[in-house]
Length: 382
Image: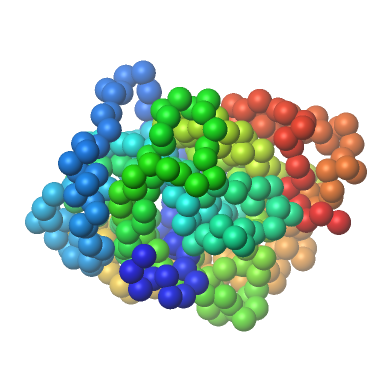
């Protein structure tokens, strides 16, 4: 995978990605409505295009952003998080794919280690390099999947790919790389996902950048936006809103039921105490206007290609870093955990019937079916 495989790699987030969390601060910005039944069927990429991908080279991110309309051909883009969902990809990002195909990527795995906003959107989906012989511990149910990354490859125009880069992070510290993607041998979503795919692979683009481990939870390196990691990268739980985007997208794309069941088994972050409720209100009341103001300023100073100047990107990521410094030093000690549901660090054997009832609500609220035999606790086994 080019020279990117020489060091630990994570795709990054940035202050731009936090825009997805802003509606949850005040619930005053409705999401674009996309009626799936009104969408025209999207064909699969032609065999010729898939074969041609084997000769693709990584894109120059800066070039794509600066001159998107001069780029020739199309881009095969791998999506696996909220971009699976029509509401996000077609609604917010305004991208209509030319073609699409569901794939398995054995060399990558799904993670939820991109920091978001405490109490509101604790984390976002991410991908990491995967060693099949050394998968992460199953202590967290987010790590229970053992068959590589499952997603969709969209064929998009160069201009649309530039828009994806800009809305995902503006290209800051990003590297475009190519990964091997394997189409499913059987289009039936009821079919089992193979541990090792047998179909012929093709190559698709995805955005990666090296992760940086801060020296401490409140390190100044956190001012670099999503490039830093929290001390325990598996600790934070995504919000129910964000998980629903992914699970809805998996359904819309017709991903395997086996994978959808895994997504439905992931517990979302829930506020369970009065202190957390107060902390969320104070956090949103103070930081919400600051972040919204930063995004308004970013749009004001953006260039013709929609990208903010470097100083604005640094300012946004610095503000994002201050958010987590404030959380670590003040909000968490005073108001409680803003990344993980309090009480979710117990073994499944110790769960009460009431707690199992909350599992039913959490899973079914995202459109899944609760199966007690498949549910495992989303915390370290004690």
